[in-house]
Length: 53
Image 1 (cartoon, rainbow, N blue to C red):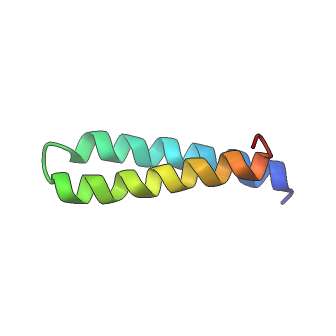
Image 2 (image 1 turned 135 degrees about the vertical axis):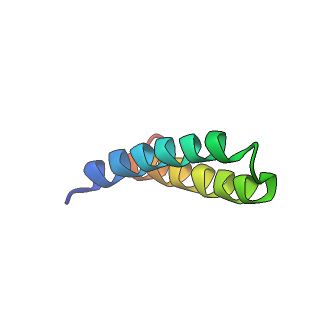
């Protein structure tokens, strides 16, 4: 797969993870916070992979 596709897939993954954070927030805030960190890392990796920064 080429580099642009990996970037797009990482951004899509961060969207799914953000949905998990939203759904999990009322149940377990600690786990939701850990998942939010993973979401931020996936989004940052996708943006950096696409070469925006």
